[in-house]
Image (tube, rainbow, N blue to C red):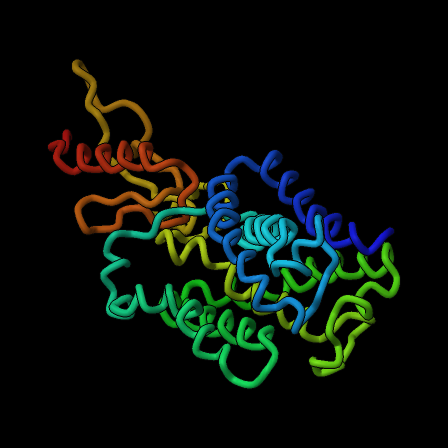
Length: 311
């Protein structure tokens, strides 16, 4: 393949899994689209990296003449949406809104500062005498650390998300090496980097994948006050509270002309969604149903509490 088209083909290849996930898993579409649109402007920073980090031939030689190129926008759009949902897809977890009381926790007093921390740290680190890829990686690491400090529930997702995206990104790097032998040596400015290669891949590219994965795997939840929960069908057993559902025992209803009829207890199951009645959490397990159904469940609980017991 001619070097002129390698960058375009490689960047466009990231759109294939993006489209597959977007079409095949509708419940992740909002998160994917939001993350991709949020990530896409990062492609406009390409002049900071060309040619000091690399100098890829691009369409109409835009990268060489202006530093900007179309491929960078395609690349950032493709990796942003996938990195945000890949962990949830593999773990079969769905997004759910955080409780309102969670937003007022003490650790969230610097929430806005945590959100902008990578964007503030990058320009500060950029002016050190090193290649710009290193402040980019460091800024994403700062953002991931701020996310974990603000949202401890995202620690596991942050670390595993980085490893998962590293494996995902490595597949594409190896595919490029196979389809365009010698392209990395011709395009990357290896003399300005550490010179360390793992399986023919520059160490900096792998560090970028880890940094991007640990930050972007949780960026949607952090910005949108969302959480992730295992998507499993609830199972009810004869216990008062379970991790899957809430079993409510109500008094027997008396027949108009005789003794009570029916089972000893009228068991009612509230689906596994977070229900809220005022500030009190009623639901016990992760959300599967939408918020409208959750409100109906909360009203049902209120009705049961207000109804006088019939004996």
